[in-house]
Length: 623
Image (cartoon, rainbow, N blue to C red; front, side, top):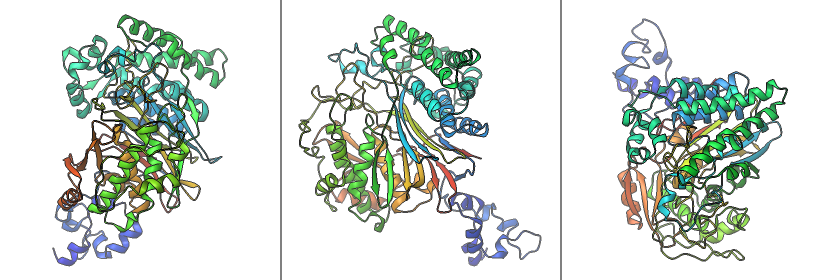
């Protein structure tokens, strides 16, 4: 092949991964290189064809392609969930309907990360009114919790259980913004739970890693350790008790509709079946029999709550995030406010200077948020101050553009009496989560991040329900200091890191996105926003770009904590060396290991495309 041909030949994978339009291809590739025919001068065939081995790229720019969706898009943590959501859109469902269907399938296909008895948050844009609302479906600690118990009991088992919130959130989304019956929304999940689906190898490996804990509880072992061993990768995996639970909830709605109930009343019949009826009673029975603290009264008192989201402006964009009890909405706003004082776009993305500024903004923000964030119904959290430009201007003075600072104490805020903390003993327990983003043909958008807390949550299936609960009482979701307002207490809602986010540009929809990742959620989303807003990357390129994450010991609650800067190993050696020279403790982690963004982006041409993160099983589907 000639040098000229080398210069201009593009493989099909390059065209797809790079998201090049027809016009862009025409401008880049000479006519002879794309012509189709049999003449020897027509280089679009044979050895010069777009998919010919001889012109394949040395490395692939992206591992996923951007997915177009003129009528609707779902980007979710598992392909079956995305497909279920799109099937709902194609039946006339709304973005909210599709989100519920996708969450139900994720309960089946990604059982370690989320479920109907977990917790989560949603951020919703109604296109017709332009209104953006946040829905918190986060359950509280059971009233009977013993806050003097050994912290280890909060990691797994019946005493680790937090009141289920997610199913209530599903119903509330369907009531407020949905169109289709719950029975339709749950049908894909019921089928996969009853009849099975090929288990992703990563799920099989994770079950094996958790085998010792899951095996302690017969109800969990019966589902996740059939015949005493983890189900094999790609083997058919079922959760028949969960299928029965979902079917009973659909039947409760159908019976109410058959009796003449309105759509809203029928949805509430399913809600009551879960929170005051047979599901709640079975959870109460199982908890009592196994020494747990969850009771029917905890279930009865629970309600999902619509709240005003947190927001900030950043370089002309409006970024709208989750309110407390998500700490990460606070993180998102303060990180952006801090970085706005630096010209990050002028720095090469993988340069030590750029990575240093990102890390220091995260560091300062974590110190502030972990000092003050708590359940807003029980504490006076200075949210307006923490998210203000003035507070960021003051805290930005801590950042040295050339040198890493120690992990600081949170900033002093008048009237907010949370003293800085000495070093603590307990380290935080990692969390596991999933996320999805949906748009429909009417321009509505829903972003959801939902979680069981740690992997498989409390690890104990609640009786014959097939459901796992969130273990949100563990350190990290709660503070290790008794006098902190986020310490474990009955009736108090532990904090989540979940932060589904919607971005507007000049008042119009720009992006819906979110990620799992526990303590890294806010850090990952911060870097994604930089890639989209400052660097103007296409959505899939922004998702796949290498990331960093701060890892604290013992935890972010502790001023003076030792911070290790984790860098995905794809970053260049000069980045590692440069950051070490600036005083950072640096550690290489897996090349694709931090976060898992699911995003829908509106392009400059008013078209919508979705991207999903290859770091996990995420996949986007559109139509």
